[in-house]
Amino acid sequence: MLSGRRLNLLDPSPLDVEIEDIAHGLSRVARWNGQTSGDHAFTVAQHSVLVVDILQRLRPNAPQSWLLAALLHDGAEYVIGDLISPFKAAVGLDYSALEASLQRAIHIRVGLPPIMPKTTRSLIKRADKASAYLEAIQLAGFDASEARRFFGRFKSIDDIHITPASANAAKAQFLTRFNMLTTPSPEQRCLPSGGRPVK
Image 1 (cartoon, rainbow, N blue to C red):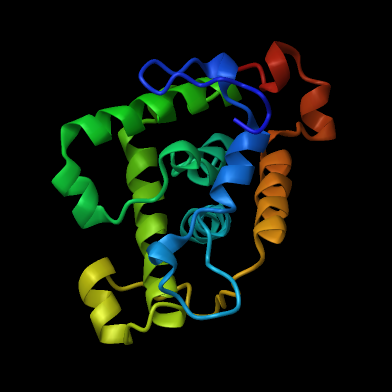
Image 2 (image 1 turned 120 degrees about the vertical axis):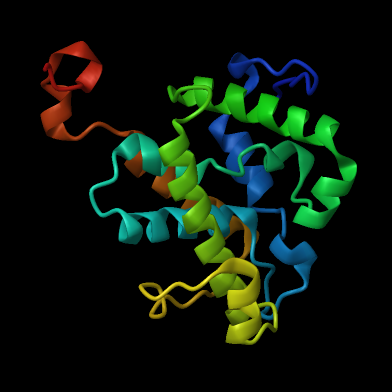
């Protein structure tokens, strides 16, 4: 990794995961294999921030841990890239197992459960599909009916406009959102139990 970490892809250690490496890698991985309009590729880093924004619309009171998991939902792609879904299916279980192993290491590194609860994963998947819908019609040349056929119908996101950014700007957006989601509020700093309210 650019940070100097050596990450074992077959047995990734959370101790070798650095958020700077994730942000750097994702800001240089293009969604849609780069087949999008604009002066810059729409990167996985920007997509990840967009998924958080959409999840907040779908569930305004979502816990911070859900939002952090949404930001990192494609985190493994900082190492293995962004394969389109049909190709992932063709590659098969070995690819899925590698991706899942990297995701678990990332989650542990940032203090999330290795595997999020099913309800959380479902909500993140819904926000992910909504993001893909917007990307399809705004950047990838789909018309709305075609995008709905592939990704579903989404009503509460029509006012979101996507502007692909440079790699450096996408990295900054990702890191800013990460810091927002991992910095305790002043109220949390005063709480016992590592910033969690005592029940």
